Amino acid sequence: MEEDSDHSDAGARRAYFVVSDVHLCDVEDHEDGWKAYKSARFVVDADLDDAVADFLDDGPPSLERVVVLNGDIIDFDLVTATPDDPPWPVSGAERRRGMNPTEAKSAWKLQRILDDHPIFIGTLVRVLAAGHRVVYVMGNHDMEFHFDAVKRTLLSAIRSRAEADGTPVDLERFGFEPWFFHVPGEIYAEHGQQYDYYTSFRWLLAPTIPHREEPTLALPMGNLSNRELMSEMGFFNPHASNYILNVYRYVTHWLRHYAFTRRSIAARWFFGSIAVLLRLIRTKRAVQRNPPDHEALLEALAKRLSLPLPTIQALDRLQTQPITNRWYRVVREFWIDRVIVTALMAGISVGLLLSPLPLWVKLTVPLSTCPLLFLIYESFAHGDTIFSAEHRSTAYAREIAGIVDTRVVTFGHSHTPLTAPVAPGVTYVNTGTWAPIWKEGGHELSPGLRNVLIVRVESGKVGIELTSRTGG
Figure 1 (cartoon, rainbow, N blue to C red):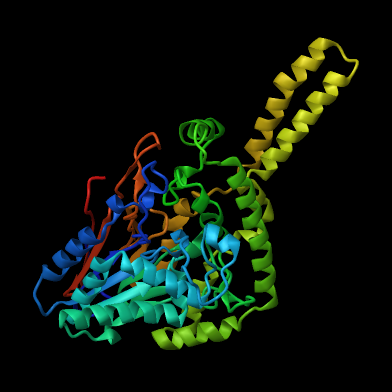
Figure 2 (figure 1 turned 120 degrees about the vertical axis):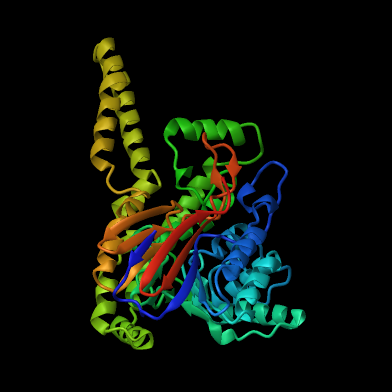
């Protein structure tokens, strides 16, 4: 696809390589398929390296190239390992579900991940050694890059690899963006979690809250669910939204993976849900007690990016408030409302059985009226779901196109690749995911589509290409 652009630099010759949602984590292999999404067979480093090599080789050497890592490249939430002899306190809960997202612990997690992904570090060295740029836009699963020590851990790994290879690199060409990457008239790249109230941070530019050890990330509900629930429910796939099943499929999943094994799901779901709810309550209170100087942060960002402050403020107003502002939705996500409704119906049924009413009334009401009331409740209570942000992504892209000068708006986050025109001369692209996905039926994992967005700018024209590195 090629678009004329009167806004980009008419003499510019640039190319952008954009990927998101690679979800690199430490590798775990289990014979029974537990946490199969972390197994070595789904490591994508070599394929990503090939894709970057193709990008660097395509076009004249003088072409300015930028590799944009558009969020969730690293997945800190999936790391449940802890050091054998940690230099800081590690609680029992952290040993079961993973360490808190503090600066020191997150830096340790990153180093553990990088140790399992040397090819990925080599890929970054390849780009920088060729004199090109890398921009890392943070997503909800890698917001730990907010911490300076975590940034330094990645840059140190790049430097060490470059020195070992005898390849000089300029680390000034590697940049981090906490929110978005924008080149006027060409591209706007943002991960997209801020338009999803399950994963949005209340203060994106100041995402930490005080903690008894040191500041910790104020994790949104989606991240907490991955850490407190998914980490102990290893036959689900946290990279796919269709792990949310109906009652029949939950029962089938339990029979298939848990009923005849020592692994448990009900207890882990119950106690994990309680843990998430308690963390959400503590996080919301801490955020309310320690609000940052948000306007000052917006002003500093506008100055650094050379954008008018009203532009930054308009983009900020598009963001969705976290789900903790809508506690009823939290209750629904953990099925607490349905448990309460079911308990009420059971109570009504028991009351009828103990009453002197005729037998036909005792049988008819529980078998007909109670299920009908449950269906009526569900029809009114459905509301927004985990898919709502995905459905609205094109509308958000259209809004952004009306605020900033760009020909391409690209998100990741939803794991669903998409290309769509959203305004005259502006295309929205979602770059899908490189993480494993469910095959049809939802019982076996297969590679993600491994999408790559290539944006080429030359002589006032912007070319857009979304490709896949696998047939899935």
